[in-house]
Image 1 (cartoon, rainbow, N blue to C red):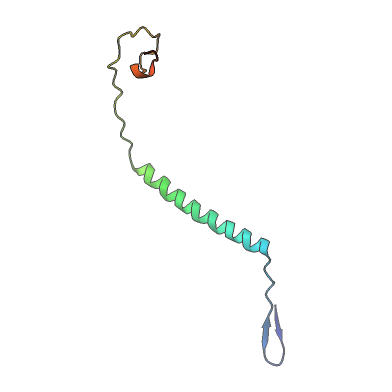
Image 2: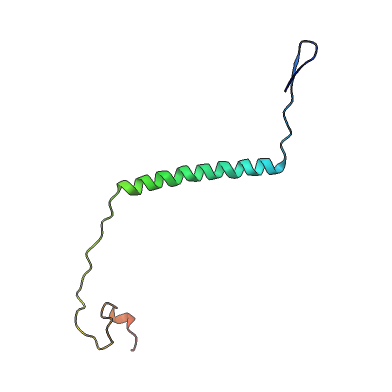
Length: 78
């Protein structure tokens, strides 16, 4: 609000309380993190993932049941 008093203007600004400052800080951090996530997402969208083909070298039966994809060190026993 502007008030005229002897050819001078007085601009009155409401006093900021702690809640307003904390809320503004949280909003600023949220916007910054959103920008970072958008950048990361755009980088991963343009980069194609390279996957190695699964090797099926353990096709024989090991006598431990139906799960032959488990390495022998993970089967248990001595």
